[in-house]
Image (cartoon, rainbow over all chains, first blue to last red; front, side):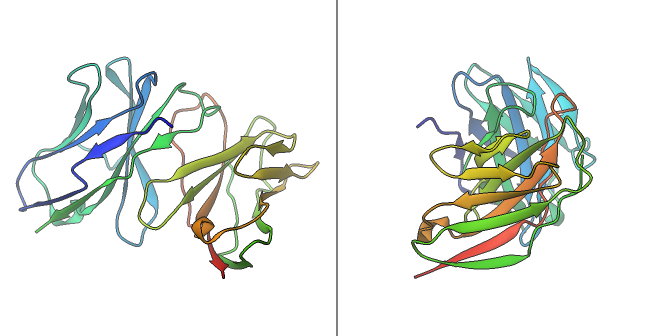
Length: 115
Length: 111
């Protein structure tokens, strides 16, 4: 069964450093997403991406965050200057269609620890 | 999106059917009901969705009441691997791409 692949599985970074989280969505999917989950809290939407541009973003997704699809397969989330409160599991997801008629496929996540 | 109410936690004996309820009394006519689950620290996993008819796939069945104010996700023969947090989400298509995950129901399958 097709999978969404995320790397690395765990990243530790110092406060103020830049991090890039990487995702390989399912090959025929056109819509891409990032969610995060702070330990013990809800899964929160960050951003959705379609046709090489952001289609929707949440209040969490401020100027410190950016997304990119640098080639035909990767989808990345960059945090420019990490803060302690950015420590969370970050999940990438993709879907074939953009409406809510399609379920998403999520990756297994990257655990980001900011120290 | 309509608010949903789910029990905080449930237990189910292995091999028995797990019936997870969800109330969505303020659901509007064009809102769909989605179910996802999250197995410990993994990414959420799509299970099933429906509008008003009952739905079944290889993972589960979704029973939606006639007035659509509530629904039940049924795992017909629960296994230990079904232990997870189950999220019921109600949303309208074409109003954006995000899903709002609440606190869900923590299902524990007991041997």
